[in-house]
Amino acid sequence: MLLNNTDSRIAIVRGDITKLEVDAIINAANTSLLGGGGVDGAIHRAAGRDLLEECRQLRGCATGEAKITQGYKLPAKWVIHTVGPVWRGGDNREDELLARCYRSCLALTEPNEIKTIAFPGISTGAYGFPMERAASIAVTEVRQFLESNTSLERVIFVAFGEKAYNCYQQALL
Ligand code: AR6
View 1 (cartoon, rainbow, N blue to C red):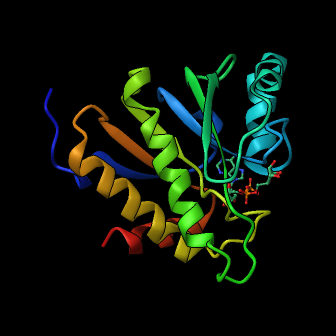
View 2: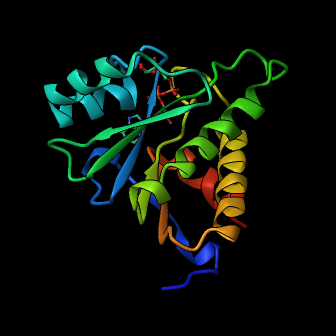
View 3: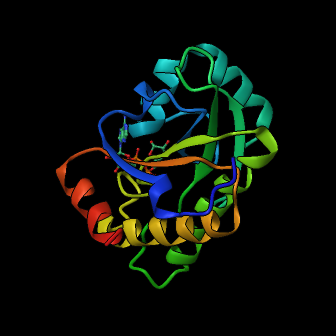
């Protein structure tokens, strides 16, 4: 299948990312990759202890980069762990680093034959990145990637709440 129409491959879904039956879900992790709260905690709980074991072998991850593991007990085959920037007012390369997270995750799709992927709002919880601004960066990066990529069939933005849903909708206008 040859895909080119970018926005028809993007969807917004409300709810819990750990329940999604996609090839890969993205984890908003920290540099240790050893688990935490928020979506990271939910993913580790749902995947089971084997995920933590594999994460230990990875020896961490730098902000803006991404590493892939299996999904274990999750419906998703893969978990792509990325580390978003901590929001420190907006003048500390936060936008650039968040954009890099999306690019790093997307770059792992083709080599791993990932056709469907779901993103949480990286950095928009504990790390404090404003949701509206983050949604706009997420949409820009995904659109740009899909324009030149023909293997990724579906990208889902997972909105954990009404506000996030509205922000993605606005960003996709
Ligand atoms: N499904 C989808 N989205 C979720 C879920 C879920 N189950 N749970 C939370 N969210 P956060 P960060 C949303 O704090 O800001 C962790 O402790 C949430 O509403 O999980 O990147 C890590 O270990 C928010 O919009 O990640 C790091 O230390 C978004 O996911 C730190 O938090 C991200 O919120 C990373 O902070």
